[in-house]
Structure formats: structure tokens, C-alpha cells
Length: 304
Image 1 (cartoon, one colour):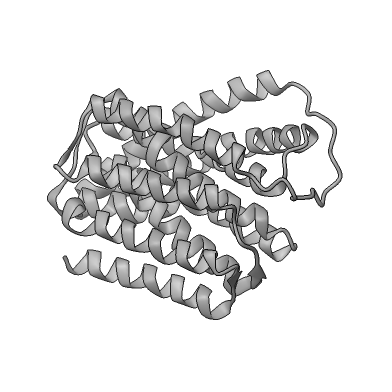
Image 2 (spheres, rainbow, N blue to C red):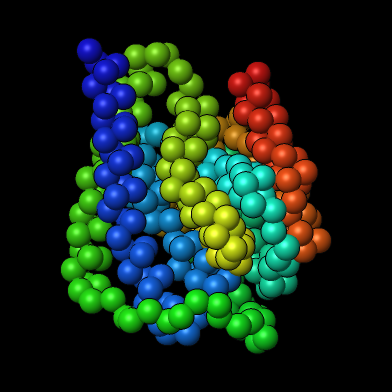
């Protein structure tokens, strides 16, 4: 019964997180397009704000679940650039070279988060540095955008009642995050699983599922700039702004397995995805390589 309650709470919390943010994301996307932002900028700066992961991470670190707190940042970042981009390429191969500024921001965010976590602890000072780095990275992306980009969609009207949707979304995020963390604790305790492994694999994939959909669907509909912008923008947000806020809420002890395995896997995943994207094309072969890389990561995590 306790396991069933845990699974139910985990699933219910995940559903509430996704539903709470979905309407907010749609409204912000419509507002940004109406303001004249390009597709890749909308993907990077609007769809890239993965606030449900941040809410789950804060709840996890306050409840002393470091694996789950790192899972919604490190684990989710690995999932997005491998399964997200790889799945999008397998479904709908595309040609698109992201702006150099966006690729560079993703690389800097990855390197900085790994460097600060490598000593086995993320302190509040580290959190402040990560959060502070987020804003100049976003500014660099905005200033370095391609001036030649042309928007392919008609500008929608600005959405109404945005403030009301923001408040409702925040309430849903808080409740959903608490349910997800409660469910995680129950499942880990009942099944005797490693909280670090569960957080970095299961929780990371669960909270990132919506982002993967947001990567695959635009590519399928002929707007790969949204897919790539979302993947890289979310990566920057997760590893700087989101992780910084989580650590500021409470310092996170980084398990040895994360330092020795998951952080190098993050570096390898981002390097692989960035190299493939810099070529200007993601076909089915490249997509399969990214999916295979995630499968290898999961296999290695289970074995170690």
C-alpha cells in the first residue's frame, strides 16, 4: 500500500507540474512571438525556462534528497540533449545551425556547473555564482542572435490575464513539486533503490518529458529552430539559473558517483550534441547516435 501511495503521489505530482506550466508556457510563447522575437529566441528564452524542474529541485533539496535535486538539473540536461534532440532528429531530420552565441552559452553553463560541483559540494556561494552567470549568458544569446533571421509564423495577439495564469501556475508548481518529492521518498524507501540513481535517471526523465515533446513537435512541423532553441536554452537555464536557485535554497552535497560518472557524462553529452549541431544538420543517423549515447549512459549508471 505504501508503494502504491508513493507511485500515485509521484505520478500525480508530475502531472500537476506539467499541467501547471503548460498554459503559462503557451501564454509566454504567444506574448514573445507577438513582441517580434524569432523562433530560436522563443525556444531559448521562453520555452527554455523549465520552472517545474526548479520547483521540484527546491522541494528535493529542502527534503534532503540530493540525487533528486541534481537529477532535475544534471540528469535532465543529459536527457534533453540526447533523447530530446536525438528523438527529434529521428522523427524529422532537419538542417539548422544554431547561433554561435547560443552554442557557446551552453558550453559555458556546462563547464561552470561541472567545475563548481567537482569538489563534492554545491554551496550557497556556488549557487549565487551560477545564478549570477545566467543573466550575462542570456544577454550574450540575445545580443548574438542572427540579425538575418526571419520569423515564419504570423504574430499572434498578446495573451490576456497573464498575471492570473502566472499565480495559478506557481501554486500548481509548489503543490506538484511537494507531491513528486513525497512520492520519490516512498518509492525509494519501499524498493530499496539508490536515491541518487533514481533522481538522476527516473526523476530527470519524468520532469523532462514535456521538454522532449516541445523539441520533437516543432521539428516535425517544420520549425527546427524552436526545437534546438528549446534544448540549448533549457540546458543553460537548468545548469545556471535553476541549479543556482536550488542550491541557494539549501546547499547540496554532491555524491561521489555524480562527481566520478554523471558529471563527465554531462560534459560528453553536451560536447557530442554541440558538435553535431555545429555541422548544421541532424539526420536520423545522428539522432540514433544521440539516443545510443543516452542508452550507454543509463547502462553505465546502473552498473556503477
